[in-house]
Image (cartoon, rainbow, N blue to C red; front, side, top):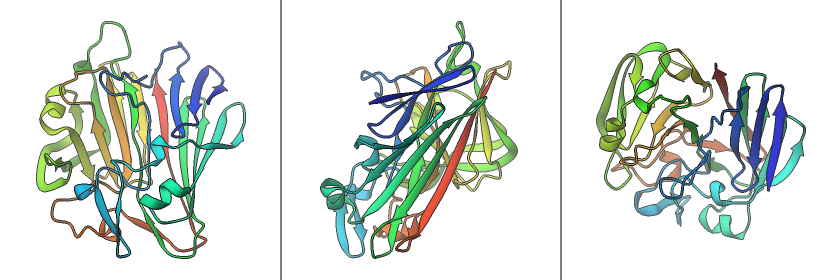
Length: 291
């Protein structure tokens, strides 16, 4: 079910399948979220839970039990219920079922709140442990922004601009989807000019430990989007290698794919969080349209 949202000059839509915000139209009626294309990538804005990225051989050790789970977890392929809604917001909820318990043996409540603002939106995740034992999890977003936006522009007319000058090396994905210990792209300064070649070679640019808590995706006139991600220690950028499609995903993560050579235990995953019974954890990111 698609749910329409409205705030001032902005309009958006959320989808109960996957709990996603799947559309955001600015004051000029331009669509700012990639609308998906099965021939390229059908995704739009998936929620990543209870893992981010892939597992080594698709398996993970959870308290001594080997469990199997697909890339980025199961939330993006599950139907959420509507917990609360208003003209400019919706709260979508997912609980465990027989299918999730086979992959991830924990009762939980995962809520996603999409709230329109005067200049964009805020997405807030809340995870609650409703069971009787400690629950490890990772979480992330995968928001695909239309890029370019304006007629006559190209992908290379845009760049990523960070809040602070950085000296960081992107983590390099390996051929099996696991992350390597060696560096990929070297970020030196506060900007990355967009180039499909980066993604053709490396698939994803993944950074951790940046000083910046916000990043802009903008054209030469400074128009585009800004994402603030204060609750997330990692940020990734992706467009499908070889497709040269008109979108770029900006992905705040708390957790990541398996590293080559890691123990295979869920609790050892970088960025893994653990909730005791009855505890909750909330994280949010904010998107601002720059016009």
